[in-house]
Image 1 (cartoon, rainbow, N blue to C red):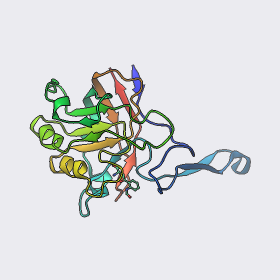
Image 2 (image 1 turned 45 degrees about the horizontal axis):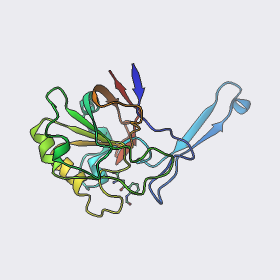
Image 3 (image 1 turned 90 degrees about the vertical axis):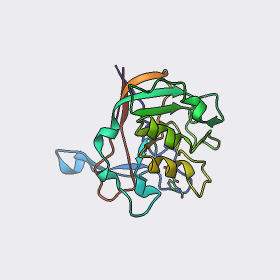
Image 4 (image 1 turned 135 degrees about the horizontal axis):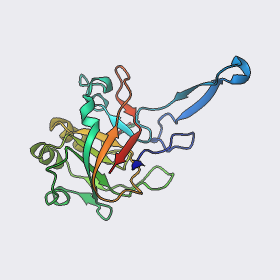
Length: 203
Ligand SMILES: N[C@@H](CC(=O)c1ccccc1NC=O)C(=O)O
């Protein structure tokens, strides 16, 4: 069974404050072409469900098309942290991660159609724990892995230093904790700082 864990992209999709909203236009309708509808869309790379490339928060680092695809396909552990104000080592230390290379936190802090104003903190300490435990991707149902007003982006940098890639803006409402196969492939956009993904889980 496939569970779609991506957020819908349309003109109402919440965007990072001040960033370009998503828009789709039918620019070449069938009434004009006689044979096809052709559209175009405009989006920030960080709208809804997306992967951050290291270049998003560090100059002279990897852009989205340079990331290895095997990071974004394979077993992931979904961990329910929905009651927590802070996500720390306590939330992962006693979880058996031996069969997964990816961890997804279900916070439930972004369940409506507004951009969230409060989010749980994610401890930067998780980076080194993930490296020691073979975890190469962290996913969240939040627009960022750092506080929205963070200038230092400590958790982004800690994850990067420890080789952990970042998947954000998931919709985990219908997902029970446990192990799934994740697929969340970024688009092959040359030089980009991130990319929207269609993210799915399979049991
Ligand atoms: N770091 C955030 C995104 C972010 O900071 C951001 C996204 C879009 C427009 C502006 C942003 N940040 C600061 O201006 C992320 O993890 O995707």
